[in-house]
Amino acid sequence: MPGRYESTANATRRRLLGVSAATFLLAACNNLETHTFNIQSAAGGTEIEARQVVALVYAQAPDADIEKLLYSGGDLTRAIKRLRDRYPQLKPWLDQGVIGNSASGFVALRDPSRREQLRELLWEENRDRAFLHNRASVAVGHGVDDLAGWLPYASYSFGKEWIAQGQAGWWWLDDKRQWEQKSRSTSD
Image 1 (cartoon, rainbow, N blue to C red):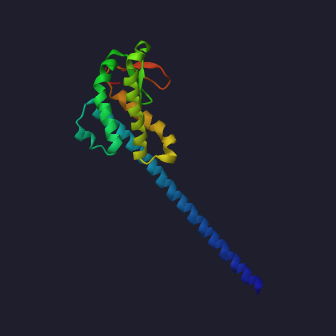
Image 2 (cartoon, rainbow, N blue to C red):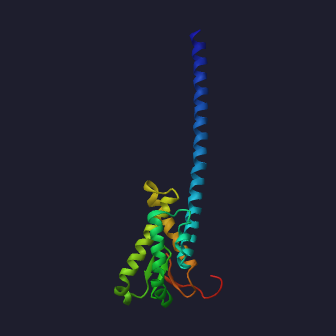
């Protein structure tokens, strides 16, 4: 009867292997759904954070409002406050069209004849914006191993908000490095 025993054992092994494979596939599907959810949550969190931070900076909001942000705290809060405090220095240059926001989330020089005059101001602003993009990425769960892949999304999310919430007549640099002026109409 060794043949009958081996046949039963092989059938049992095949069933166990099948059950194991099915369990593995179900676990993989479950992880995929969780991962997709986390990406969607992080994307939404980044966009919300960008919208809120830019609104607070442009509105010259008090410290208490900045400290209520979902991802605020420590160095991130200090960077947002520096951006807010520096905005009155940037605004006249934005109004004159000498500088503009970029789609990539930074401030760009539109009038090269003012480079030396604005070098330090733009460097400080862009340093804090880069820090903001970095910390916002980490705050939504895309740090360390995933940071390089998420940073462009964070930068462009903030860039979109700096431009959208900017005043009509301000200039902005698109992702093809072409300058455009924000429409003075009510819809943009």
